[in-house]
Image (cartoon, rainbow, N blue to C red; front, side, top):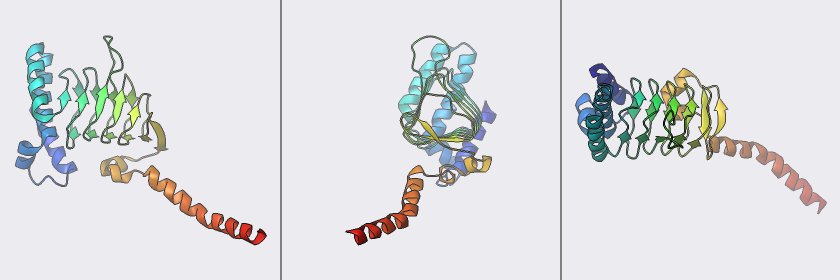
Length: 213
């Protein structure tokens, strides 16, 4: 557990250029506070001290604005940037080297027992306000765009945007994911680029129409 906590702190320093040192991250980063709390409560949950785990988890949510169920399974080097409003449900499974922003929900769509929350692969980036709902699987090396709502399985090396989420790009590399959000194509920028490419042809057609008038 201590090794996992140490790695969570180290990855915060690596991922956030605003993080100046180890002490600052420990004292001032709510995402790190929530993860330390989760590591402790998950350990207690495994010892069947479930009420104590839930009680501590409740306090951590009050302190940080981040809710992580003690039964959720989260891999190493997990980073929550900003953090406020993050919810990770009971049967969620999160791989290694996952990076999420504020307002993300890994939620359920059913009140039935059993698997009802998402499974997130390794090296995934989930943008601010994104909702990944139900027992869906998000493949490794995938980017979920800000504000997206994901209800279906997503293959590896994909970029998903929209409501409901749709795949707009596939073929990301390990380095793309390591570089973060800026390494992925901006769909709005791509649309603008396409319009600019068509502009000369449109101007030509307008000139021809004017000649005919």
